[in-house]
Each structure stands twice: as C-alpha cells, then as structure tokens.
Image (cartoon, rainbow, N blue to C red; front, side, top):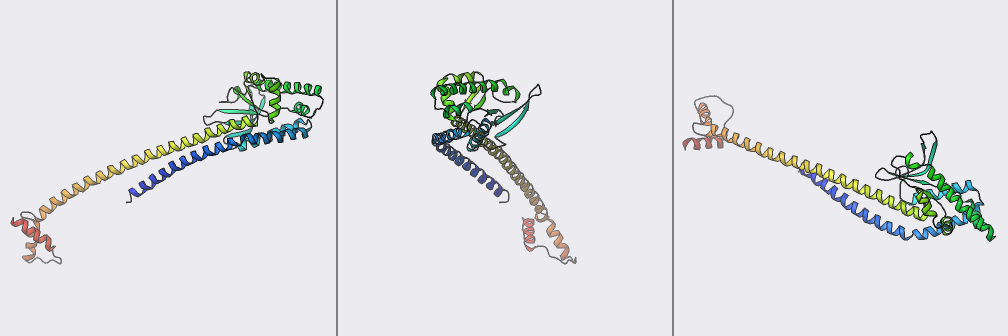
Length: 309
C-alpha cells in the first residue's frame, strides 16, 4: 500500500492533466470561432470611431501618431498575447554604423522568430481629404495621402530590420490604424499593397492585424499544449521506470524470502531432526541441569516425532 498508493495518485494526476488539456483545446477553438464571428462588427466600430477621431484631430500628426499607437496597443490586448512574454514594445537596436533604431512592437513566436510591427504612419493628408469639401482639393489630398504611404514604405524598407534583429522575418508589418485610410488609397492605387510587399513590407489594418495576431496566439496555445504533452510523456516515462524498479525490488524480496525459508528449514532440521539438538539439550535438564526456562512444548513434540521416525 505504501509503495503503490503514490503510483495510483500520479496516474490520477496524469489523467486529469490530459482531460484538462482536451477541454482547454475545445474551449479555445470555440472561443476563437466566437471571436472571429464578432471580428467584422468590431472592425466596423473601430473604423467608425477612427474616422470620427481623425476628423477631430485636424491634422495634428503627433496626436495622430500617439492615437495610432494606442489603437495598436488595444489590438495587442485583444489578441490574447501576453505583454513582455509574447510581445514587447519600444525595443532599441543599434546598427553596425552605431545608429539607434527603435521598433514599435516586436512579436515573439514559439520557435524563437520575431515579427516587427511599425505604426508610425502619418494620416495628415487623409484627415484633410476627409474634411475637404472641394472635389479638386480632395484629389490633391488623395495623391498626397498615397504618396505619404509610399514614402513611409520606402523609409521602413530602408531600415533593414531583418538584418538588425536576430530571427526576424524578411517582411515588416506596417500598421495603418484606420481601415478607410488604406482602403481609399488602395482603391486609387491598386498595386499599392504589391509594391509594398516587393519591398518586404506588409501593410496591415486593425482587422487584418488582429486576425494575424490571433493565429500567433493559436501557435502559442499549441506550443503550450505540446510542451504539456511532452511533460506528461516525460513524467509517464519516469513513472514507468519507478514501477519497474518496484517490481525488481519485489522480485528481489521474493528471492530473499525464499533464501531465508531454506535457511530456516535447515536450522529446524538440526533442532528437531534425527539426533536433534532439542532432545539432547532437554536431556541435560532431566539429568539435573538447573534452568529457569522451558523449551516450547510443540518444539519438543516435533523433535521427538522426527527423532523416532
């Protein structure tokens, strides 16, 4: 009982861990399905709020930049990723020329690779486009807005983050916090996304970035489940070894019991067999030896029967 009860408890713990892992997997997929269901609704609401706020900013690029980083932070929080473990912000890097570069967000993948997100996109011209009523001026602001996005793609591509950060991907995510800002630009410049991609820059908006981050979160969940399975396998292996040691000890004890039994029978033969010691010693008492104790009567009877055979 002392040896096997801990073994039983461990097996119960492993069974519970496997069951919890399966429940967690089912719950996570159900939750992901529900979140994707509300993604379009969330996207519409964010776009509406962003459009209204852009109109209110009146071309303040610094405020727009801060607001863009705030939107990015909220998306990261909704993604399920944990800050400072699965993503970090404002990481500093130094180039070979000694120049200091700072990444807005760095996503850490389970295999050690990195994803870099940049949110410093100016939306001044987009704000002017939205606020302008004159159609000719709207076209001017539209061209400036498209040129601004292209310019930022060029600047971001020139930073060569993939050579600066170990295990970073060849492409960098350029975050535009307002869906219509990218939609209207790509509608009038159909090759805008492809041109950016050719320069190893992927343009993302709140909806597409959130979907990508959900996939990253799923990768982390799968990695944790895999690590849990490996830990269970490791513990099960250790448990098997412990059980093998237990059976080896029981076999050893059995052999020792057999040896002791043989020794016991051999000693008893000397005590109770032909010409045994018990009757010879008892004879000393009958001859007058003074003793304070008496040999067990059953042992005396056995010695007499075996001696007479």
